[in-house]
Image 1 (cartoon, rainbow, N blue to C red):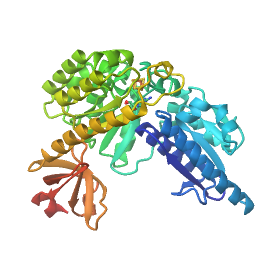
Image 2 (image 1 turned 60 degrees about the horizontal axis):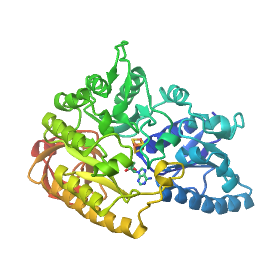
Image 3 (image 1 turned 180 degrees about the horizontal axis):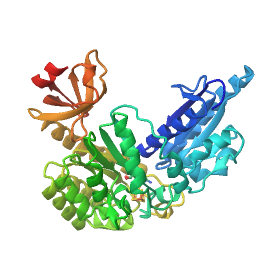
Image 4 (image 1 turned 180 degrees about the vertical axis):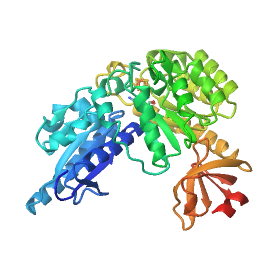
Length: 450
Ligand code: 5AD
Ligand code: SF4
């Protein structure tokens, strides 16, 4: 711990994994005497925690670095120092090239090596770290977990061995690696002691998690891990994301049937609806296996809300392929989804193909696809009107006297109610639904308690 307080500003791009990593960096830097601040203006250290999944995400980092260079120069004119670190997947992918392209950057740390940041700041370690030190990272971070509100993310798995032909993740996050059950259970217990009621288990391929149980039991998968975590008293809700259809095994599906704490929501990206495109994407499954999987999951938990990711305009995608994706969406029915235009990522097999789809076609397909997904999302939200749903309240709403929480299906729910309900799970009569949120009234009992 150093003498006077210093200020760190962290800007997070991309996925929930990065949100988790940023929170860990705040903890880590807190021990070095840094307080988190909400703007770069007066920060002593600025960290950009970056995403490389699509081109735009990386471009945004470089344009931010341009603005930060001006700020750093202005601060230097006043005799004040400002250091800049780039963390995350752009740091991993660019490595030393990052500082050549943007010399304003002082430190470059990949997603598996940011535990070295404090040593870098004190000059004790190299300002560039992009090795895949996953074990070192998990070990270092395990016991340093602080809770901030009733919900928390817990990383259980990192990396990916699937090599979808469009995706940079296997290159930036490295090979699949499962964190030990013992460490995960210890972290969840610590969070629960600090008032956390819901954990979301995170991993690029979270359902590929595989390790020994805490008592040395062989061959645990995510299903067993969730079943074990559900026994922790006061832990009311468990979620996990993101899953791959190939790793959705029977034990995990059975957990959706048997474990009340496991929420009825599943993010299971399919990416495209035609077998030809799935094959070209190297997804390792067909539409037939995907449909059968969805049927099995729905048989286990009939009300499960399905979510997915879709890419339009993968190289070689024809009008008929795109129509097959629309048909798949109509067949399955999604509660929510993310969709993207294919973005050519250097070093991936898809980028090398010479049958790239013109930008105008991608734009048109994305609009059509998003209209369909939005209509399904609105229909799913409207179907909740008239129901009573248990809501875990986690924050105040935008308006006076309003509080906000999540339904079991991960929808935001707004009600008029006392802030004392934050942290509790309370029944709400749903009276309204929009594209992104539900509204409702606390049931009488909860009103009496508040
Ligand atoms: N172009 C467009 N979307 C991509 N994704 C991953 N790589 C690309 C790419 N090159 C999307 C996938 C993935 C989500 C996290 O981002 O849909 O599931
Ligand atoms: Fe990327 Fe495919 Fe791995 Fe998901 S499964 S991280 S899309 S390579």
